[in-house]
Length: 163
Image 1: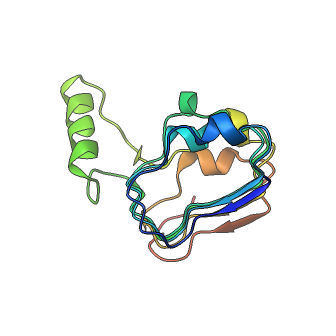
Image 2: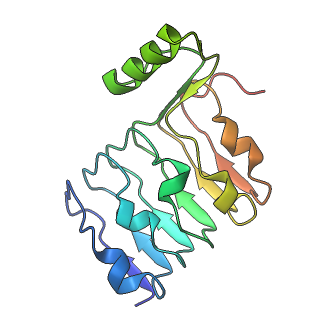
């Protein structure tokens, strides 16, 4: 199967075994309009995925780079979620605020905070379209600026600072 559309099902979780069935064949996946709180590990393992629409969920953060195995993602829609990028801890979830507090107590005061940094090593030369509109962004996530293949970027609503 090359295309799978699971949009609008109100899913709160996702089958962690999807990658074992479709890791080589699945090219396009839409799980938009559900209630997913995070991007499932199994989705990050779909090596040949070229298009991922995970918009209109309740995603608060992007998995760390070591979670990802996707090698050819060209289109990523993360719009209408709860992702944050800020020059301070305002607007972050309690988990993110705790991480900031730990960093500060360790003497590592962060100047830029984000829970939506992308796995640049994998996406730098492939990602062409990125939609981060309608999230809780106050600044552009640093990794977005490193995506050299990016031709279309939607940051509508909430971005108030660009550098």
